[in-house]
Length: 172
Length: 147
Image 1 (cartoon, rainbow over the protein chains, first blue to last red):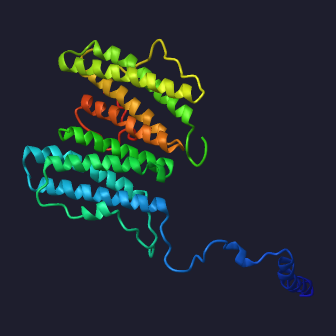
Image 2: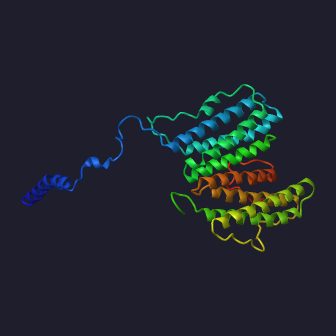
Image 3: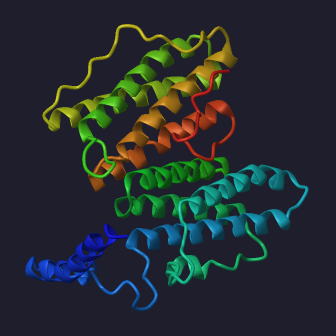
């Protein structure tokens, strides 16, 4: 037991002197948090997250639009033509959603006005409406490229190119 | 690599130029096995690739670099011996051009990103034409398939 005492004294001495040394050096534990209090309120999503959420909402609307178009024409040649295009939009959605993990309690970003306005697909969807939606989607995706990191920009550009091929497949 | 995951503008443009040059060569091979509307399409696309090649070379020169020179001969991934294999070759070439333009989307410049994204839509559409179907992720997927 006698050898414990010097260690205990050393420990006590350290516990006493360490805060003094840190204070002398101008260090405080609160200096770790240089930004806003991380525990104050719900965290807001970063701008690129908002962009991704908007793109996801727009892609969800595209899927709804195709489903509405197909359900009104099930079994027809038009439905068979649209089915692979719908499948590709579903692949887009899967890939986009995989890029976003929103922590529980995070404030959700509002979808873009155009996306929320189109959230309810009309009962009857014409091929011309699909074409217009595809063209608008391609344009909107390209507009978002500067707001996101390179890999996500490439995903947006690839989806935009797919949408452009859909315009042609739909007779555009 | 420069910046946070971005690539340099000149290497990305050079890659697109090289892909356009390969397409110009490859369409010459594919076109020999096509006829009618398919041949007309191949000729139109060949002209488009020539124009794109010249435009890219001018952009690279404007950035102070020397455009890569075209090769005298390109090793094609498979032989074109009939219309079916010629169309598969054309789709392969367009996939390569699509992928190269997608590379430009990773540069830092917003204008060049926009350019790359717009420019890849043409080859993606042409690849879909030759293949007879669209793809979910032009330029991203392992779309440079051999027949």
